[in-house]
Image (cartoon, rainbow, N blue to C red; front, side, top):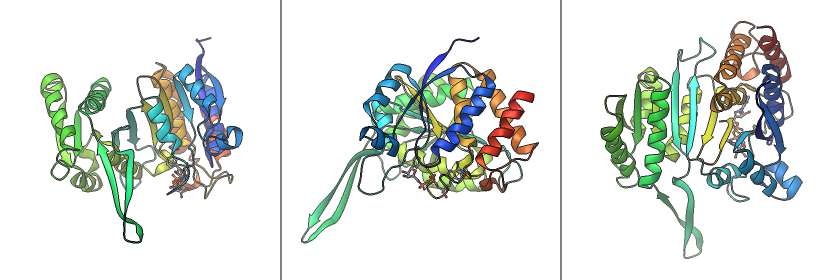
Length: 343
Ligand code: NAD
């Protein structure tokens, strides 16, 4: 038997427990080497420990440095701060890797194979926001501060270039808005150009695109892109756009990578509208689990999982409602397990 790898498991809120159960069944069928340490977060964390990110959960991740996580609910406007953002900050998970690959052909866009690399810790998401009162309006002016550092830019750009080269990609596209936010995103473009000259020229192609033009180009001709790397807010928006090119959020996995830990999750949220109904598509989390297997040097198992997902969707034609099918989460998981077991 291969060496067991300790990993933290967070079921999450809403559809989280359903898709995590389905994913665990697939990983068990593969004989994946993880030794799970189940921990609570989100609403379940509040229930269990009065905190959406309990100390025991942080301690577990600090020890294992590896986690598979279901979606965590965050109230909009007021309420507690996003546990996802807190996790990224706590473990300095500076790189958010979001691949998008067509698995179910015949959609609006075919043969998509893109990766969005999003900076995860800086930019306009640092939470430095406030209102200024004028006369009797306490919200008369809203202000936000964005911070991008040279060191932060170098980290994420190096990650994107190295990942692109290691995975045989041809081109890295730097996405920015340096024509308007000349300092905040100019530093990102400038650092990319310097690093390219220093280290990457001749090893891979690089181009720069302004974010608004990039959004249009992604819809008109997404095949012109390969790896996109960008700052936090632009990356958040573009990665959802790119998920839409391959069939929606149910197909989009994500990895949060840092020096201290790596946390794997689906891009989507807790989908409260369908929670508890057995309708959720577990594929995004399963693809995240495949990335987790790649991360622990078990690409053989990651590939087996991806191939079994492909066969279940396209040969067996077992699909959940978001993909136009009628299978429940459990029926999909069962069919996938039988694909893994029987080939
Ligand atoms: P959402 O991603 O939960 O849902 C958007 C739409 O997509 C909904 O109609 C939902 O039913 C559908 N959907 C999402 N995942 C699906 C799946 N696997 N299968 C089928 N359909 C799916 O976004 P939201 O409703 O804006 O957010 C709900 C909550 O999730 C919020 O509290 C938000 O803060 C949180 N959230 C968490 C994460 C995370 O944990 N990483 C990410 C995004 C949102």
